[in-house]
Length: 81
Image 1 (cartoon, helix red, strand yellow):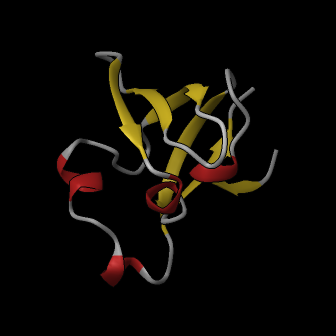
Image 2 (cartoon, one colour; image 1 turned 135 degrees about the horizontal axis):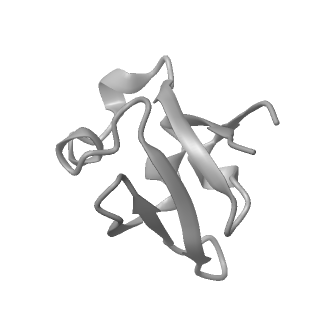
Image 3 (cartoon, helix red, strand yellow; image 1 turned 45 degrees about the horizontal axis):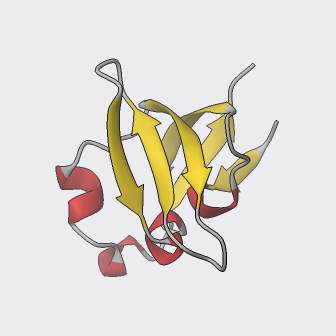
């Protein structure tokens, strides 16, 4: 277990968003606007090659979005059992 950034989280494992990086003033607003909030569960469905976007499923509604690696760097997560 332990803390990770969303951008480095393993594919197909369940996780929970804990919060945001200390440099969150530079964080894109869309992360919060789309519902990637603390305590939200998620899993990464697909990671594009060559540092491409990741496809993330999150929340009880199983919403899905694509995020760039640099956007995932702002989100602090932990792995769930």
